[in-house]
Length: 212
Ligand code: SAH
Image 1 (cartoon, rainbow, N blue to C red):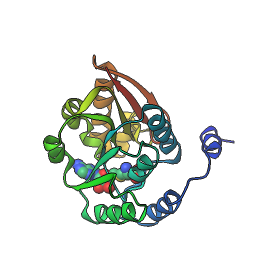
Image 2 (spheres, helix red, strand yellow):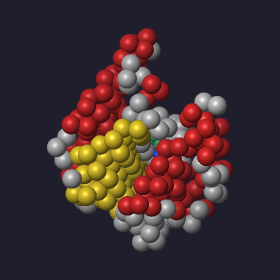
Image 3 (cartoon, rainbow, N blue to C red):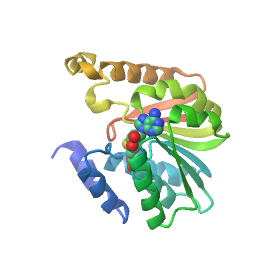
Image 4 (cartoon, helix red, strand yellow):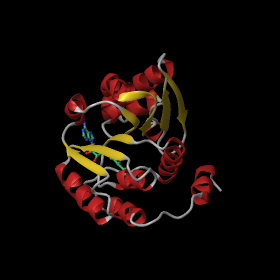
């Protein structure tokens, strides 16, 4: 059996409403894909280890990962999640309400590049899962917002095996700018004096960084 499939099969079945939300997100073509099963399981494990009290997410989509984070953090944890696509943000708000997490999760509609500028520090945990091409631009502000000792998790950094293979990306030439920006981002976070980073072949590539 292919190794990744084997590893995904080891993960216990998702709890509701996560299972239904994953199926819903997959059906609706206008939404971007939600965090993959193995990456979601990594996120869950990291949250249980670190017990963050204040979380920032970039890219809410329909609220799947926000709800997963709410389920796996202390009761008084605050989650702020940013989404610029109005339709997705509205659906996320509904899903979050239906799951009973409307007090714990605050959805902010808007462009992340703007919103992060007016958020107050400090966050214990940041999950970056939207705007792959802009991660590199968000980073300086994210590091102002993330406390020392905090964790930054960045999703989709291997971008369907294109990040490690610029030539393949050239074939799909429209993606080359994103690939180059992701490469720059990975180079910066793996060499940054204030970050200790591991890039994992989980999901579509997940970078886990500890803010020193
Ligand atoms: N974290 C979600 C999936 C997010 S998909 C989950 O796993 O459930 C990425 C989302 O980021 C999309 O809904 C997209 O609209 C949003 N997005 C992309 N660029 C953005 C930006 N610059 N500002 C705010 N949201 C953005």
